[in-house]
Image: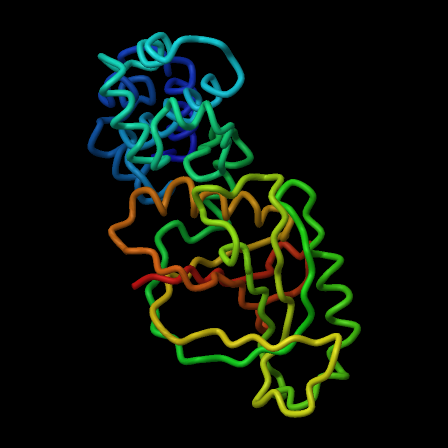
Length: 291
């Protein structure tokens, strides 16, 4: 069975009918497979059910209408298949944690729930380059020494930060031979996932594993990755697609998982599987803290 083609047909049908009262059975029929078989493949490859995708795409589109049009909320609710403003508000708050009115008034436009349309490139990326179902691991505390830089999601300067860090690593004392490297996101220090958007400035530490911080001087900083439980995703291929992987984590997995997020810092782990920024076979693990 050509499930890759059927998934593409299913997504095209959904996107062309977001404003209609479509059923998941309609999507399966358009894709040429039974609901059971298509939904099973949809969940296995894309990380969520057909119904979940439809709901999140409707809400993501509706969130843009709240911000960038003057349409009444009741009209937006009806356009995206909700029976009433109350039903729309309940579904919206379940994703965005605020009412549609507050979202519009505060001009939030956050990336949580900002589920993008699955075009062919993104569908291929999720099918081939991301483990959409993470493994859960228990991690021991890790000491990291590195440098700190600033960036936004829209104007990503992390490659420059890593180039600088790699040029300075030999100056770091107590490095563990063959040790791993880490990119530690400090976004949650001042912002939460429900206030972050593409233009908010956040900091990241690019560093390497050390046995101790003794003798560490500027410009290096100390970071301790706390032990605990983490959901681990593997990203494969060019790091140019890393933002799309994080989009999947925060716009799909985070909104459907039964795991409870813990507000420790998330991070990337680079080991001997990382073969270069644009290498098609590079692998990077993304650690999301859970309770």
